[in-house]
Image (cartoon, rainbow, N blue to C red; front, side, top):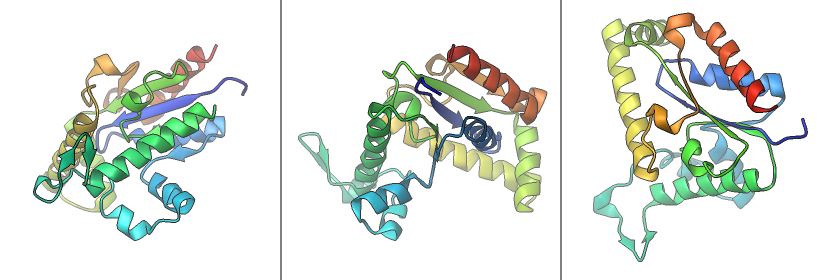
Length: 197
């Protein structure tokens, strides 16, 4: 692959977005940057991984942090910026990769080789999947979905001007509940291929 390929996958909890990301990465032999990105950063910067994980993808506590001249004392902000810088550096170096979440559609929006996708799904289908996956009731699964999507939305919207899940800020939005995840992957892959021509 001569041309740089960066695929950003935003996703609702339970919609199988990470599965699609993993399949794309496997097909195109690309690394996946997701929640494990913090491990790469800890290794590169010789930082304590357990300490970083405590603040990963979390909103800062306004009572225990302050911002002066645009610089925040919040560990949550510092870790978010480390991840955004990590992605910018990889992209600037010409590397190809798949990234799940991490506000990548916003952080890398100026890169012409970025392909941004959002994966959504119907609550009923997502709840059945989460219920089976974690052996919880449908009601508990729905509560998990609402809670996780709220956290993702708050995090994304805090660090990005582009709103989480708003189709105007993604090239392709796909509902895996309507056609199934395998067919959804095929459509996403066809779109990726057409973008790489």
